[in-house]
Image (tube, rainbow, N blue to C red; front, side, top):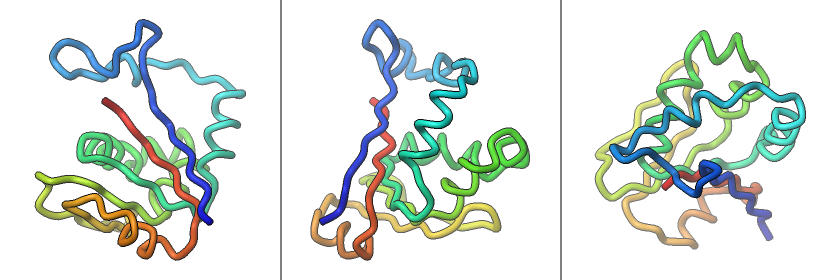
Length: 129
């Protein structure tokens, strides 16, 4: 059986995003060794990563960049190379690149299909509102 972990970032006052959908508060989180150690352990190499469209687009806009690879090479390695499953009814396609690999797009949530795609790996769900 797969182990499933979930990262769900919310602000201290219970919001996922600002009134216009902005998530700049999340990008302003200060670096913390304990938090980094925890996230690195939970997102270990080999886990399948599951995103919705917005989280996928946010992750893709940062992790394959040279800044991300320089600032957090361990997490960049995990996010860029681990299998990624994107669940979106509106996204038409996903594109791989030299630093962004192993992506599968599902337009419907079909648990058996998602798990079959996953090859018995543990799953980490990156989630936002």
